[in-house]
Amino acid sequence: MSRDPGRPPHERSERRATQVGAGWLHELLRPVARGLVYRALTPRGGLRAAYALLYHAGFFGRELHEWARRSLLATPMFLSQCAEHGVDIAVERMPYLSGPCRLELGSRIRFGGQVDILAAPTGAPLLRIEDGVYLGHMVSFAVARRIELGRYVSVGGHSHISDTDGHAQDNPDRPSWEVPAGEGDVAEVVIEENVQIGHGCLILKGVRIGARSVIGAGSVVRTSIPADSVVMGNPARVVRRLQPVGDAAAGAP
Image (tube, rainbow, N blue to C red; front, side):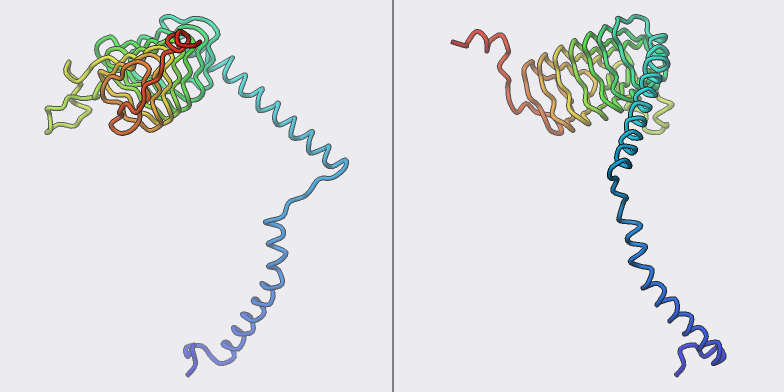
């Protein structure tokens, strides 16, 4: 029985001939196409020098663009929004600012990418960042009362630090954005000096992280952490205690 009874015999013959021709052409062109897709030009001699020149031109052009965006746009625009700030501050991208937050910055601070600062619409939110702090790409803050980062704190990218639940917890019949956080839903966050916070951490309201502690990547910190601790997990738990630098020096022979 014919596979295509609706077509006249001569049309079926022409279709089969076209398919056979297309298959032969496809087989012929396949190696050529694969060569074009998966092979690249290998520069040699003078061509190699020309490509090296193009690479360096692109590299310096990119660095010049980044310098201009950082030094002539993002950093001065951000500092214009700070109530207080020191010197030697570098901001790679203009932070996303939402709400009236008081910003107090020390000196020698680096924002290593996009940073978001979301402030509550009421009260007097304060974000204080001391000297020598580093913030990675996509770090975000939610500030309703006070968040403070001590000297030489480093925060890994995609981490979030919040001193508020963002909304009240006792209004189940209304959208969360219509129910602002009350006093019981806000508690300040303090991160003491030399704390290292890994990638993708979540620091919740009311937490105080002791000096020189290390927070493992992906940790969710819900309770305060003593100084010189290594913590990790969800919820974060102390897995090891570090010997303070002063004690180590005192115990050395």
